Length: 74
Image (cartoon, rainbow, N blue to C red; front, side, top):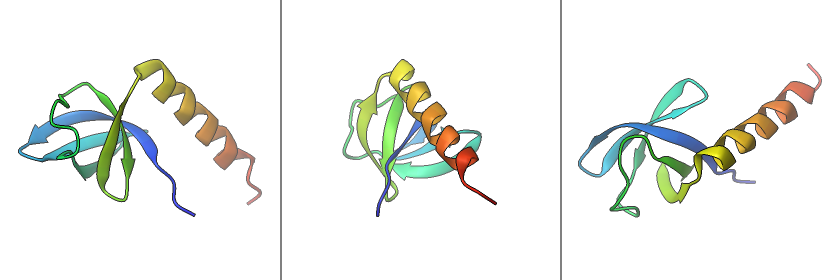
């Protein structure tokens, strides 16, 4: 199963962006989103930003994902 996760773009260099996902910064290719800019929330899947995402929806999604992880035993 694959999972796409929302994150906030904190830096852009060419077609690469540094995306903050819950405090973990990862590099993602943004070539699919030519209008992406620093501060935008995007959905990241397999190293690619595949869609811009509303900030409120991104935060709610991350909250729900955190609840799922926290509910896992062990």
